[in-house]
Image (cartoon, rainbow, N blue to C red; front, side, top):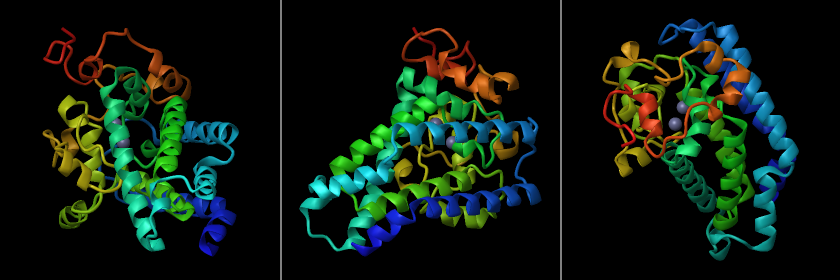
Length: 291
Ligand SMILES: [Zn+2]
Ligand SMILES: [Zn+2]
């Protein structure tokens, strides 16, 4: 398929183009009209959040030089995956693949909140004391490696066209920056967009210190999964200006917004069992203890 070859040949420039284009757009929007005042210096957070992005990019390239696109091309050459069993029009395969991969990302996000050891990794994303375009990319390297392995498994089972994998990764990247943006969409526009995609106001609820709010709105791209699986919360109780971002237990900027602290964060705290993630968000004396 010519389109597959074209995308494979220009994969890096397509990715970088969309990454920097979206990043610059949202970053400028945040500077011109921020939604909330930041609590930690933007320079410190950006340096460290982008530092972990650079580290993750290097680790992924070293561990998986062929990346998801390489796995998709290999699966296609072997005829592996569900979609390779059907003679679907190319465009239908692409749309189905993007939707299916988005569902898997949603389920993976629910999983990393529910399983205590995975939550330890994912808490690095939630511990950011502020919420902006760089929050969307800060994940612990081990979570990034796990995500990549889940993506490989998804590709082998699904058999998506190579183009669909690139489209999905580019959309996910751009949407993560958009919906973590510290930006103010007009209420009416937010309401309309929300019927289809995750907006900044919708995902901000997920970064609340309140445990029921942090355990909601898991979607990254399509908003339908949260509505369908009953994990949707419309607005934060304290409002977007009044809500507290982050995790109750970890609020020292040195620990949560500087690279060495962020990398060590999964290994902090006692191992107390299933309810550990609930205890971190809510008041330790409240419900959700580990009895
Ligand atoms: Zn989360
Ligand atoms: Zn997030």
